[in-house]
Amino acid sequence: MQNRVLQETAMRYFLEVVRTGSIKDAALKLNVASSAVSRQIARLEAELDTLLFERRSRGMVPNAAGELLAAHARRVQQDIERVTGEINSLRGLRTGRVRIVSVEGFAYDFIPTLIAQFRERYAGIRFDLDVCSQGDVARRVRDGEADIGITLSSVPEAGIRVELRYPSPVLAVMASDHPLAGQRQVSFSQVTAYPLALPLKNSSLRHLLDISCSRQGLRYTPVLQSNHADALVSFAAAGGGGVAFYGEISVRTRLKAQSIVAIPLRDREMNERYLEVQTMAGRNLPEAGKAFVQHLVAAIQAAGGGLGRSEAVTGESGSNPE
Image (cartoon, helix red, strand yellow):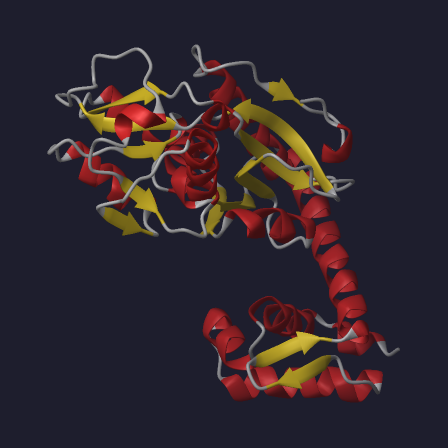
């Protein structure tokens, strides 16, 4: 293998094609012409004397050789980031980059607020925040595409270190003048009598609701369905008896503003959900990433109130206690 094919530009373009599955999409992400990406991929394949992708009608998928090269490229990237972070730490945490991937609920208000607070102390740190589906968070952390994942999980993920596992029960969210707003607890059977705003059928939250309804023999018909979680909360906050479902952390700012109330549900399925802060198992994060993980975990634990016991975890998720 000739070392010159592993230069930074070629590998960066290659990894972007692996991530996006398309030369066109990779070019858009990189802000370069598609032809430039194609040339770099062709050059890699010529120098290595092997194809790196399976060309399919709907995009490009790395073959066995491509997967090996992608794994190598990610390790190199991580080593560079770690060494850069260690050098920066010698003169204080002045610069750095933290890549975060999160489910939608935490990305609207919670994470941006924590980033702003963190930068009051470390103004030179830059952040990337991507939103994706719950099932995609662990994969992107495990593949090295993100430093930190913030998600909702109940199943251990191989290759993932859980920095914090924190109770995140589903709450019934409604306007402060809703007929049920004064209750300390409600059941799903009570709220089904009101207009429901729900996520789409393929969401994990909708799956929990369906399990609870099936167990109790309940039926419901949502008046609003959306893949945008904040739209559902806005519907409930607008009044008219609407009810949405969310975790406390995701609506904390609105709760402080007293524009809504969030009431615990008695149904056991609604209380078996956890927020997880995830990093790659066995990876030594750059100093900026380490510092933000500490800031994130401390903020979640400090604001916990009566929602339950959090678990700071020091091993891989497969060995974590519940």
